[in-house]
Amino acid sequence: MDGGGAGSRVKVVGQVERVDGWSLTYPEFVDRFMKPNLPVVLTGLTSSWRSCEDWTLAGTDGRRRPNLDFFAQNFPSPLFQVADCSSREFTDHKRLEMSMKEFIDISVRNSSTGSSNGDCEASLLYLKDWHFVKEYPDYVAYTTPTFFVDDWLNMYLDSHPMLRDPDIANHKNEINCADYRFVYMGAKGTWIPLHADVFRSYSWSANVCGRKLWLFLEPSQSHLIFDRNLRSSVYDINDDVSEKQFPDFNKAKWIECIQEQNEIIFVPSGWYHQVHNLEDTISINHNWFNAYNLHWVWNLLHEDYTVAKEYIEDIRDICDDFEGLCQRNLAANTGMNFYDFFIFITRFVLANVIELYHIRELEDAKLNSTETAHPFVYNLMQIRDVASKMISKEAFSTKNLCIISEENRSAMSDVTKILKDDSFRRLWMSLSEAYAYIGRGQRSFDQMRYLNQKGCLSVACLKSDCNVVDDITFLMREIHGPEDLVRLIDAALDE
Image (cartoon, rainbow, N blue to C red; front, side, top):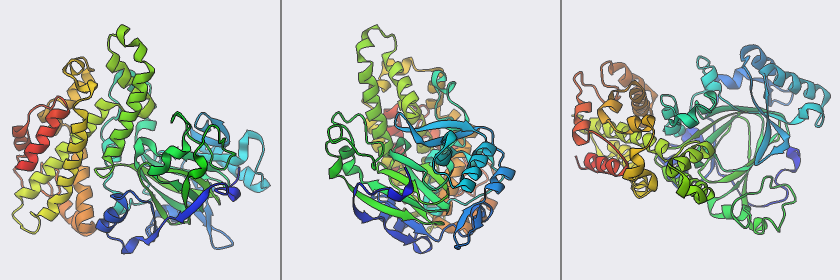
């Protein structure tokens, strides 16, 4: 399959909106795109990125192309995953392991021969999901645009493990769970099958060089690409899709976008999409979520849990810990389970409560305002809504909470221990800095960070004797489940 015929078989009814990123404010981005969950292409935000210079070469037509020699010389990564776009394996491409040198050698050989077919599936190898930031933290390839810094997923993974059950975590490759910041690199004709993003997260994708064709399906139409049992979805929209297997596929109405070099596309939650490289392309990609799409994450977990539970329901009566087995299967299949997610949102409740506390303590009326407090109040209200839905779930019954792993129990109970933990303090500082950056701009952010040389890690706090830990634990000393979390949020908002 090549990029030339991509999208020719489907009904395209619209184009993704394009906006100058420099002229768009953060509140405008939230109101127009993030909150209503709509895609957008942002221009003008990558001109200062080091990657746009180092990773590319000027072509004869004025367009940039990948500088493969630079990658070979500077990033001699160990083995990583490369997708073979000519071979299917379940719902994705077949994955191969190879070194950077092997990948570059094959890419150069293909480029010199002009091959689009051949051995080692040479022409259609796509380097995907490369955890570049984790592997090369001292090389600052790019700066995350302001619109995307409220990234709870990567904030959390920079300081915490997502999976805590030892039966699951020990079988996971550490680097694959390290973060959701990736570099992709592929030749013309490489592509990504139809999918919705992991955890139903948002994503953003920046073309360092090259062009991509994106085809999007809005969430309200996602049922049209599934089979009659709503179990499997279409793999490639350009195939001769079986009308018998997918009876409603031809009713789907797609939105299209050609993304140029130096453009960034925002992919909202739950939008199925298929992507084709129309030229040799390098892109930088993040998956992320926050308060605005947290309900999408919970809904996916709940749906996948229901499927996992139904699959093994017939062994409930002979299983000593049926709920525990359901949660282990959920974590293995989805990337986290109810307990992992609860520990995650508990940390963000505490971090947001701390920021709200500091704003209310400020003497400056301009800073101690409803407008300044709004993001943290909104975050807490959205988490409260999700936590309320978790209360009635079997996983959080008294019986099941009594038999959860020690790793889960210790991570969710003692509030004082959590607040004094170094991992939590790093998370709290990241959240505080992100909102300072969003709300005040880079200069004010740097000034406040310089002033904040004391025990408290909140950018909003300038006290040398901050007693926020005592004040938070006064509201609640232990959290044993979603009901306690809701009570803590209510107490914090009523203060």
